[in-house]
Each structure stands twice: as structure tokens, then as C-alpha cells.
Length: 357
Image 1 (cartoon, one colour):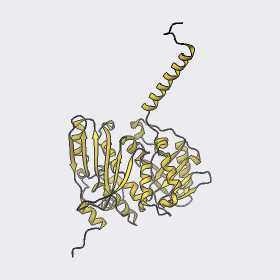
Image 2 (spheres, helix red, strand yellow):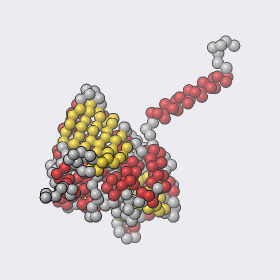
Image 3 (cartoon, rainbow, N blue to C red):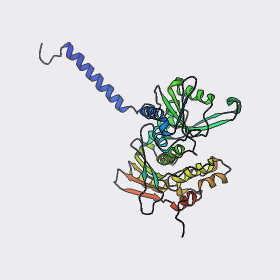
Image 4 (cartoon, rainbow, N blue to C red):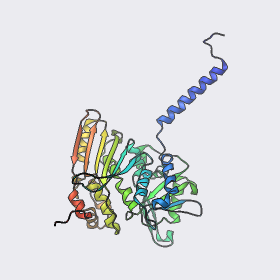
């Protein structure tokens, strides 16, 4: 037998190596599972619930309900962790003390991701409408928008067809932006649509009036930018890196005012830096993306919402964007800037101006 003729053993080894390399390549090419990546974050939320101001209960079938602000306190650290869960484990979220001489606000929330489309639109975006009638709940009607990685298991939104993404994982987590715990009929719908066993689902409830709820909404500053990119019709694969910051206001006890504060934080205090592939796209986004392009820009969001009889769909969609954007082009190396911050509006709404004495 010549030295170049493989033995049966080396043939088998060679075949195994080829198969291993092929599997590794396929795993590398396949998009990550946002539910798998966020699973350890969900476990941390549950395991450290008491310290984080979160109350954990379970349904009779074993579904975990994490209350981050309904009856529980729902602290800021919990909000940061929930924001990371919302991004499917693909984002960094952190608080920063603003030490500028004339700060926009003393506490800023910073967000970044190297997988902006999947993290923000495939996971974090609050796009899954979950509702139940009075008859179904046996009491009060229920409505909430669902966000977070379990959306990608259910793929109930047309957006997932555009993203060409469908996660498949045995466990899932969904965040509900609502001020009451979900009724069983809604839990059953989520389980059915996600294809999960009851004890493999975690539902996290974050009222905007809570500290945790305020954090997780303001942490959408980059997601709001990505959604506006989508609305403008820019190909999503243009955006390859994203980071941003926004001031973290105190929550208001009134639901409308609390929602207004979190929206104002982004519309008037949000700053986003995107890295895109092409120069023409970078230049266009710097011009078109900022919230100041909207006809409704310039008033507190709670006032705008009230003036349209609490109907989101009457508000100019162009308003839902960060206040200021910086867009860098890989093609040319140039960076373009658009929009502006409005610290005066925020401080008028939230307080914090020094007494004139």
C-alpha cells in the first residue's frame, strides 16, 4: 500500500473532520438564537429577583411570571437586565453618570449592539399585540404589546418575513409593557403561538410607571432608530453597528405622563450613532432620520398623545426617532450628523433647573 493511499481509519477520520468543519461552517452562517442567548439573563432575573425588586410567581402549569413593577418595586438594575433580555442577549445596556459641566440630565442610559437588526427589530421591538376581552378574562379587558425574544418563536408579525428569521428554541421570554399581570387566556395564546411547554416560558411585566419599566423603554433608543430606518425604506442590511444614549427620567405616577417621559427621553434627548455600508445611505439617514423632521415635533409627547385623543396612529410616524443622529459610512469613512437635542424641553417637563435665587 502506498503512503498516499488512505487506510480505512484515516478515511473515517477524514470524513469526520470534513463533517465537523461543515457543521461548524453552517453554525457560523446560521443566525443566532435570541432566546438561547438571553436564557442566562432570564435565569439571572429569576434567581436574583428579590434583590432586583422583582416578584416571581408561577402558574399551575409552571409558567414563570416576573413582576417588575405591578405589585413589586421593579428597580433600575432589573430594568437594565430586562432591556438586555429584550435585545435577545445581543446588546449592551449600561447606566452612566453625566459629569458634563452643564449636563443634559444626571443619569444617561447607553446602548450598543453589533447585531442591530436582529437585536432591535428581531427581538426588542414591541410589535406583538396581545389582547383579551372582558368575557375572556372574566373581568377587565387586557391589552399589551409584547417585546423580546419570544416574538421570534411566534413570528406573528409581517416584519419577520422581511427579516427572514424564525427562532427555534425550547425556552422563551416575552416582555409585556402593561400595568397588570396577564390573564391565563393570554398566557395560553403565547404558549400556543410560540410552541412552548408551559414551564419553558417566562413572562416579564414592566409597567412604564415603574423604574424597571422606564429603563427598558428608554433603552429602546437604538431600536427606535432602526425602526425609523425600516420605515424610510432603507435596506436593513445597510446598518452593521449601532450605539446610542438617552437620559433616564424618573417615572411619573400617572401612566400617560410616564409614557410621555420615556418617549421624550428619546425624541428630545436620544443620540444615536449608526455605522452603515454606503456613503449615500449615511448622508440620507443623517438628513431624514431625526425626530425634528416630524410635523408634531416640539411639544411634550404626553401633550401630543392627548391632543390626538390617545390614538397612536394619528401621530406623525416621523416623530418616532432619536433627537440626534451620527451616521458613519464604511465606503467613504465620512460621518454625517443631523438633528439636535432639546434639553430645555426635558428639564421643563422633568424639573431639575436650578432655582433662580
